Amino acid sequence: CYILVLYFFFLLVCQRLTFSCLTTGPKGMPHWSKQYPFCGGSFQSPIDFYRDIIQFTSSLKPIEVMNYNLSSTVLYTLSNNGHSVKMSLPSSMYLNGLPYRYSATQLHLHWGNKYSSKGSEHTINGKRFAAELHILHFNSERYPSELIAMDKSDGLAALGVLIEIGAFNPAFENIVKYLQNVKYRGQQFPIPGFDIEELLPPRLDEFYRYEGSVTTPPCYTSVIWTVFRNTVKISREQLLTLQTSMYYTQKDEPAPLEMMDNYRHTQEPGDRIVFITFRQGIVLSLILAGALGALVVIAIVCFVLQRNRAKKQTAEIKGIIYKSTPSKDEENPKI
Ligand SMILES: *[C@@H]1O[C@H](CO)[C@@H](O)[C@H](O)[C@H]1NC(C)=O
Image 1 (cartoon, protein in one colour):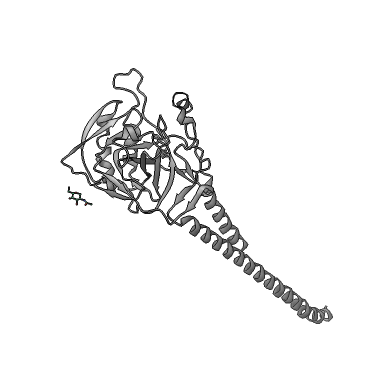
Image 2 (cartoon, rainbow, N blue to C red):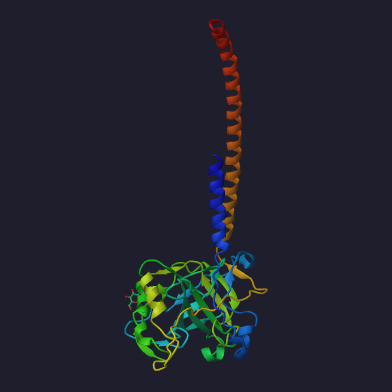
């Protein structure tokens, strides 16, 4: 009985630990801040979404994606920009649900390496996911272009999608199958449009929202971040293709450098609060509190049961002694 209690207790503890203690050692990029002072400053991205900085709010509107279904008869530029694979997007694509209209400019990905399926930039309670998709937008209500918006405090809006290993993902294949054509830095390849919304998780109303930066130099603190709560899945093979197809270097460079672990380590949240539009944290706490309560009850029941059994045993032993004494007395005269 007590073993059962212990077992459940460890199960609970282990679950808590995997939530908070699974941190990997991401690669530092300390040289950035010398050339780009913003990279060493505050309000940087990505960050870890952990309990202490998260706050539920019911006042954020769900994200609505407009004109995300690109025609397959129009070609868009896929390129290797030296730190990721990038797909250029038309400004006819835009977001609703933010204080301004934000029009799309590009999407790109971050990933780990073939030995490690940990390559996302944002982490949740220290957990790093396999990869991460970013769709970048600029404030087209206030600024004429991404270039002019990129260093303004309300200039950019990014969608972040955490990627895990799972079933084959046909939407991601629209990019993955062309990676061979943009292996080297500076290479470009035209790819047909597809429904970009299919790269997103189904629920666009559940997300983490905070103010941060672009995660590559010059790290301007101009981004309103929306990282979706739900992940999307790509297959192990698709992830491997992402991890092994591209190079940081140009085609004819003598020392090719494989593009891997192109994620930035998490930055200090400082005074920032991450707003969440879902109540999972509270529900989880309630479940845990409930489970702990149940454990205490089981433990008490165990204790009472064992005490009753002990009493009964003492009573039986007394009975045996009481009964056996006369029998021994009966036997004794025979000897
Ligand atoms: C996207 O557009 C194509 C035609 O270009 C259409 O067949 C498809 O149903 C559209 N998808 C959605 C989700 O509306």
